[in-house]
Image (cartoon, rainbow, N blue to C red; front, side, top):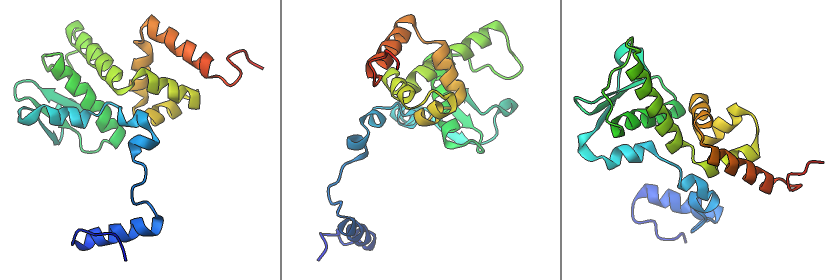
Amino acid sequence: MFPSAGGHPRNASVARMRYMLNIFAGPTLSDLCPSLAAMYHPWRHLRSLGQGVTYSKEPTPGDKPAWWSPRSDHILMRPDLCQVERRCHLAHELAHRDLRHSGECGANRSLAVRKQEYAADTLAAGRLIELEHFIDALCWSDDAEVIADRLWVTRRMLDVRVETMLAIERRHVQDELIRRAPDGGWGA
């Protein structure tokens, strides 16, 4: 009665559910929201680095949310972070790694360390928030918390992306918002 279930009991229940919902070959997430399929995925980035980089959830030096150790090529992340925080902090630590930073952190807030943090934030925010996704979110709301939530980033990453946006990117955002406005951007 149901399509082939592949022999496993779980497969049979999935096949039954699909049959009842009439979704045998329905649209995928990529079909429903193409922009999400292209979104930067720091966990895939980590996985693409192979066995060289390791990751664990455990206390970090100075109780920072996350930390990358260049000596052992290991990323530590506090276990109490929510999903969005883990996503953003992993992107930040991978940026440190990709930029070949020293791994210094904590109480040492020298100019060199602050520059490294700024560079890692800028790279992570740029990876996490692509311009077209940002424009789509701005069309949805002008509330920064709503926009950050829609982009699956922390408010801090959103702020960094906006602060470090190039002039040409700002102009593109303005032009797109005007183009997409229901009244052509002329107001009522």
